[in-house]
Image 1 (cartoon, rainbow, N blue to C red):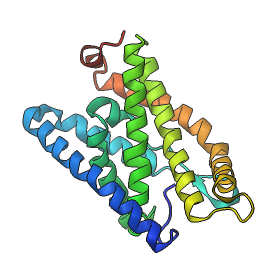
Image 2 (image 1 turned 120 degrees about the horizontal axis):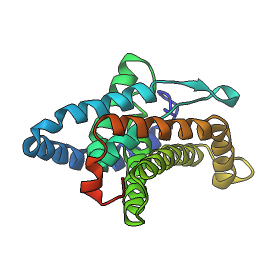
Image 3 (image 1 turned 180 degrees about the vertical axis):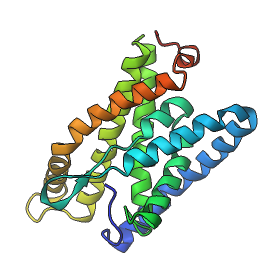
Image 4 (image 1 turned 90 degrees about the vertical axis):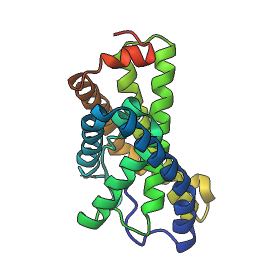
Length: 217
């Protein structure tokens, strides 16, 4: 993650682009509504996008020549919801693919689905559940960022397993191999991302989340 340029078969690349497109369109409408109704939220939106860009650009070597990195999408998912992160994440991935050769254009749809759609939806679902359970805000934010990060890599592993099934074990065997490769570095990175996200949410005025979602301070 990100899946590099030209790595996926053309059919898979096209399919993931078509799957991701409706989420991005829905997110664009949601983002427009947020800016119209809450102009003061522009600063937090910029912070969420910048946080995602910086964290997801930090590549650490994993085994067999692959790389792992934080995703940074949990922050925006908690603050603005997953539809908005579909747009912000798409912009981040587009700039990274064009400017940093991190990911690419042919694999953009697949990377959008894993990092800008699946991860944020899991993060937001965890945040809502933690709020209903009455967990402290810091715990909810940490779990959201932590599990959203791992969800992104789980989806990426599934995408790669679908494209390159194991000769013996098929999809399941490939999923275990890809997931095992990422897990070596991703588990500690997800913990670190969760902690950093808590710090940033507090710096942005995280106590407002108590009013929005009913969690304990």
